[in-house]
Amino acid sequence: MLEELKEEGIVNKVGGRFKLSTMIQKRMVALNRGARPLVEIPTKNLMRIVIQEILEDKIYLDQSGNVAIKGEVAPNFDSYFDAGPDDVDLS
Image (cartoon, rainbow, N blue to C red):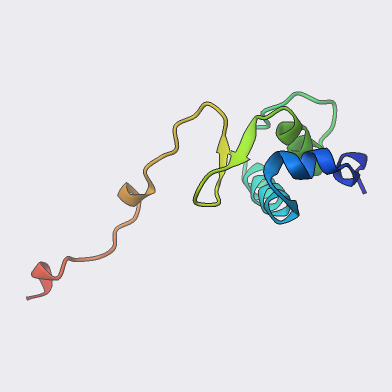
């Protein structure tokens, strides 16, 4: 286990163990899919990269539970998804 995860500081920083676990999992998925690391550390270990991003306040969980990057405006996901035709179109 990573030493940083044994400390309560990182747990308190993100608001609890559940939020920490969620943030780590979601950010690791993003890194696996090609997202660029937000910190420069001499490792390819994704867990260490994510932990360092959290410790340096580079990422956080937004109100909808998604990992957000500090300083970036969250995209409006409503415009990305088509919910299908309106009720009017079906008449």
